[in-house]
Image 1 (spheres, rainbow, N blue to C red):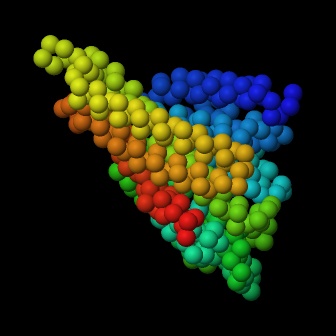
Image 2 (image 1 turned 180 degrees about the vertical axis):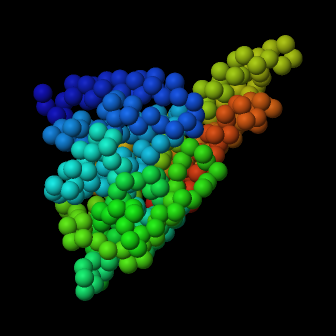
Length: 380
């Protein structure tokens, strides 16, 4: 069967639909903000979706990972999937095969290790805007760590704040600039290494975990400096786009959940002897939410497809999806709280969990303004 035939596309779509249905069913049984059952994730095959088959993975693509990311957002699920699987496995896939990389990939697929990627500061905008230096300046900003040659080997310096899931990592995959030329590399290092500090950073969103990673001359073994298989700056840029799209997928999922919950509530909640969903103001608000979700879905789908296929304009699609979907999700969650009335402001409703997650997603890996600035830079 030809790779480009319609039958192949239909088969892949059905596989993703089945994956989505299974993920939604499993995650529905876990209350929002409850710590993820990592063993369940591993047994379901979600941890090894992009891992090669010979390393106990499914040999799938980012498109399948995006399905899980979206369903995790819909369920407001807690867990290190973003840092360890979306970004950690993504970083390892950019590297040429070697014993250390392959071992870590196999352990990640089986749930035996958490290799968390340390990219740009999670809340920073500096790594988003291409600016006058283009993608070169972007990747240099995105790698706040530098690797320097000392008399006794390599030493790692730098820091990054709000790194997703770093506090739970068994290995850190640090994006760093090597030597004077500043070529990006991946440094594999133990979080407990001398000269390295991982300090948890509490945030209002209780479904996520972040940490400040600081390296002050941490010793790095020669074999722990891993170079990218292709153009290092292009590979680093792909990782940043991957992070942005994964957060956009999460925002799309939570926006869908808030829309569904609001429509269901408007059908049963009565005021003045009739369901509130029959009032024009409520109808208009729900219609606005639906439009925002529909536009987000199209932009996120385009970005996921571009990244999965390695399209040259994937960065443009990624910024479009991140800028719109994350802003729209915050608006949708806010409208959901408003349309639920007084119950929407209570702890028991659970809407606050989604609202805080949406607010955090909006800031993670570049604000909408930063991504719009990156898009506008194309026309300078």
